[in-house]
Image 1 (spheres, rainbow, N blue to C red):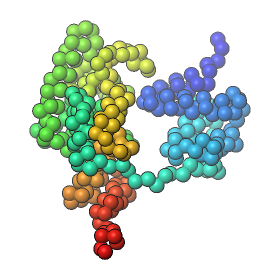
Image 2: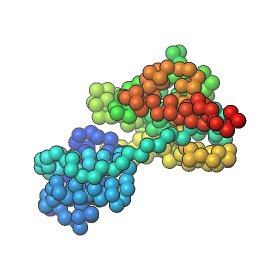
Image 3: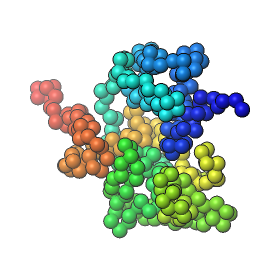
Image 4: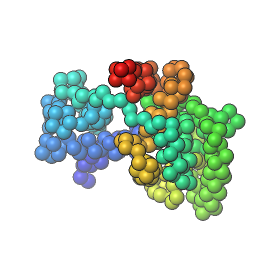
Length: 320
């Protein structure tokens, strides 16, 4: 029996460790790029020198973002340590990609509402949550029925960025729309169960701890996809959540229709949520908790946005 290809080994090892499908795709992608960069040489024939050359190339020639370079670094460390069982030592002597110092793009309150009004149905509800609760798009799409607490008017974000849980606010203005959407989700789930399906994806640890949970209504996605699909890892037929790209496309169209001349999109709602709360006098620590930022410095960027556009500085022209 021929030995398994190195990329298949990467994929298998990622699955053994129960990493997400996105991590699997990223690690396989960077392992392939690394091998192709060095003219298809097998990783066992390479080491620290070749890794440093590749990472430097990404920063200097391809001008990738710092986060992209870090992802490539993590993928190659995984390749050598977990797949090949090779200790490549400390990787520090390579050119680091520069982290751009950019202020986030922010809607005005009027712009945010105008974009949301251009959206209809489920897209309107999702955009309302992004702005009204400060959710990242993927956090919103990954919401389960049980994560919505109507009585306390709060949303629990499970396993957000950095694998952290947090609680954020549920806007009064969308409660009835959200309740109606969940009623529709229940009907879809009951139909799936009747057809012999109805199971939803759960992370490995949860699926092992609660083996019956995948078919429970409480664990279903608040924003399910319109069709069943095959899980690329398990092969099971399931109903996943809506795709990010479908929402992003609709928001881009809505921004264009409003005539807003900003490089705005889904994540702009989250930036606007934070900026508008600070402008309305809420404590920065409170905003930090609602956003789920580990470091207060990350939240501080929105105070810089507030200082722009004449909000705290008077133009010398206006004093003439």
